[in-house]
Image (cartoon, rainbow, N blue to C red; front, side, top):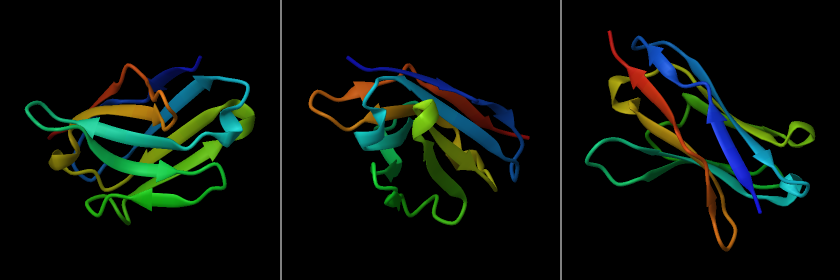
Length: 114
């Protein structure tokens, strides 16, 4: 069983940066495909970024060039570095282990506002 804990969210002004972390409690974290999703009120949960266990990365078009997903398998942690933040990035951000069944964290709130 996998437990995921997101952290690093908060309030940031437009153009600012945040670094989110997703720490997993799993001895086999290194073989997981991990993704960051986000969900704003009234919206569907959407994929933001994904990283495979080999380090292959995928990004939503809306965040390409601004967000970077990375992983530190020794720490069982996946990061999402967010730069040039926009108000449209405001959402609860969740990490997800793409297994069957999937595992989700509790989410961390990111608010981009002046």
